[in-house]
Amino acid sequence: MRVTIHARTLRLRRPLATAFGTIEHREILELEIEDGDGFAGRGEAAPLEAYDGVSTARARAALEAYRDVLQAGDENRAGGELLDACRAADDLPQALAAVDIALWDRAGRRAGQPVARLLSDHGLDAVAVNATIGASDRATAAAGAAAALRAGFRCVKLKVGTGDDAGRVAAVRAALGPGPLLRLDANGAWSVEEAVRAIETLAAAGLELVEEPVHGLASVRALRDRVAVRIAMDETAAVPGALASGAADAVCLKLGRCGGISGLLACATLVRASGAEPYVASTFDGPLGIAAALHAAAALRIETPCGLATLDLFADCEHPFVVRDGAIAVPSGPGLLG
Image (cartoon, rainbow, N blue to C red; front, side, top):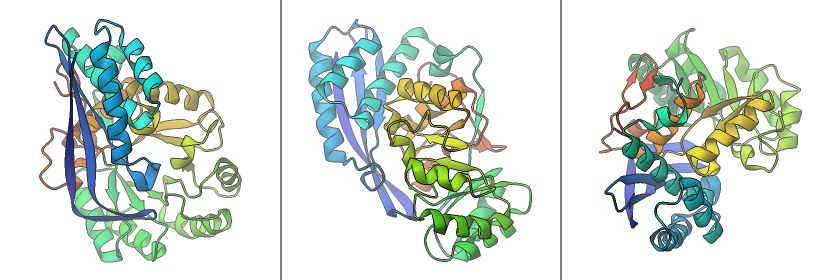
């Protein structure tokens, strides 16, 4: 099997402020595999060290180990066997995601079917998405919300946990009007007591949910019992036992943390079994990661808006994922992108 690894830098049009730091660019590692029959598949590893603690260099080292495994093994082995062999070489979910995505892409191309069709016969044709606004000043946040509304978004996620949260939330709600959904993402910036006070203050704006207001299962559970707004976990979902805990109302799933499409489907099953609601978001991934997440969300029939409309935040990043009526159509051609 031929294996190539390509590094790609995606620069944001403007820096995005979050509670864990400001993001100015993303380093993406694209993986391509091609079998002896000429069927190729592409995937991507998109670690974000400030968020998940995994550096691009660490992911690159894992992908190099996988290259040796994939080139040395029998390319006709089932995708699951190939993935297990890579996992045995280096168990790094953010890098395994690239292999898993590429294997699904190759399978779709070989079958002449979109990946979502391979995953489910009853998937969605389009996935609802949210716009993302950084922890900027009031005027910038309001302008971003107004632009999202003009672009057809029906849900906006605002980064909070830094500075003038109350002023920015009020400004965004005023720009949106009463109809669109507004969710907040604190990236674990608050303690339980701080989160209770903040959410009680900000709830007047009408909130769909608050994502990762605190870190840790015990803190998420304690907070959920004390506020009326729905609580979602994101970073805390990486804690062992979190997905099946039922500690939150919703759980944000990401391809890198789950180890790819296959892992994300398994994680969603655990979340639903706990009584919570899964939805999917990116860590500001590239086009391949967004495509893979769209196929997975469609197969799971996730109707909660997903954080997958992030590619327009980058400068000079061509992609086919246009938001129409608050949703992105799932590619209908073979593989990931058709």
